[in-house]
Length: 518
Image 1 (spheres, one colour):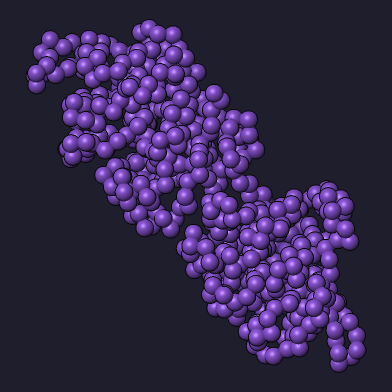
Image 2 (image 1 turned 90 degrees about the vertical axis):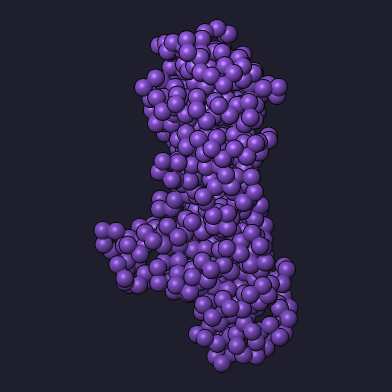
C-alpha cells in the first residue's frame, strides 16, 4: 500500500524539499481553503494517485459527495463507485446506506481485527477499502435535509478507519459544527485561509504560506510544514480522458453505485437490473431505490391492491402498467373499470375492444347491477339484499376502482360488505381488486374505513410518506407508522418515486416506478 505523493514541502531544517505524501489507509484527511485556493485540485490529485498506486488484487471503492460541483467527470474513474451532487437528497442517503452495509460486511470479515492488520495480508476473503469524499462539507452540514446523517458521519470519522473507511473533507472554515470533527483527522491541510483559522486547524500558530494557488500548510510527522500541491495533470482538458481510458483497461474490483436518471423506462431498465421483467405471475412495477432490485406484484398473493398519491404523480401510469401486463399474459381475463367524471380510466379501457371481457362503468348503481346480474354479489334494494340473486361461475376478473363515489356514503355498502366478501374468496374465484385512487371516507365512517383497510394485500404511495402519514394518511394502511421516523428514514420523492408496502409482511420499500410508453 503505497502512500500518495501529493506535492513537495519545505524542510527548512535540512534545506530540502522532500515529497509530501499522505496515507489514505491510516488517516482521515481534512483540507481547508478559500475559493480557488487549491482544495479541489488536491482531491483530483488524490484520486489520480489512488488509481496509479492501486493494488489490483485488492478491493477499493470511492464515494464522492460533490457539494462543490467540480468533480462530476471524475465519476468516470473506475475506482469511483459514486459521485453525486446535492440535487437529489436520495442519492446522498444511498451513499450513507451503502457505506453502512459495506462497513458491516467488512466487520464480518475482520472478526474484531483492525482493518490494516488484515487488508492486503492474503486470506480467502478480503475486506474492501472505502473512501468517502465530501467536497465542501460546510454546505453538507448546513443543509437541514442532511441533519439526520450527521450522527452517522461522526461515527464514520471516529470509527471508520478500523473498519476500512477513510473520510476526506474539504472545507472553507470550521463553521456549521465542523470543529467537533477535527480531532478525528490526523492529516490536515490548509491552503490560504484567514490567519486565525490556522490555530484552530493545527492547534498552534504557523507561518502563513505564500499566496500562490496550491500553496499551503500540511502536517508532516505531526508538524505543520509549508508545501506546494501537485496538479493532477499538466493539461487536464487534454489528458483526463486518456487517463480514464488507461485506467479503465485495468481489472479494478469496484462496484458502481448507479443513480436513477430523471426517468426509469423499459429502454434503460437493464442498466440498473439486467434480469428484471414481468411474467404471467409477476408484474414488475419498478426497482428498489437503494439496491435496484425488482419490485413486483405477485398475482397469486396480491388480491387487493391500494394506490394512494398526489395528483399527476404517476398513479395512472402505475394502473396502466398493471392492467397492460395482466392483459399481455392473460388475454382471457375480464376487466371491469369503475370510472368517474374525470375519465382517467377511459384510455386504458379503450385499448382493448369493448365486450364481456372489457366493461366500463361510471355509477354505483351500474356497478351493483353488474355484480348482481353477472353472479358476483347480490345488490341492495332499499336496504334489503336481493333475495333472487344467483351466484354464477365468473371468469377471472380484474376490478379497477377509481370512482370517487366509492368513498362517499353511496359507496359505503360496497366497501364495507360487498367487496370484503368477494376479496375473502378472491383466490378461489379468481378476482383482483385495484383501488386506483384511495381517498378518505368522507362521512368519517370508521367501520367502513376499517373494512376497506383490512382488505388490502399491498399498497403503493406516490407521495412523500412522512407528510402523507402526518397529514392525510393517518387513517390509511400507513396510519400506524411514525411520521418522524419516516422523515428521518426517507428523502423527499422526486417525480416517478414512491413506496411499496407489503402489508402482510409489514415491509416498506422506496422505489422508482417504470414509466410506460405513451
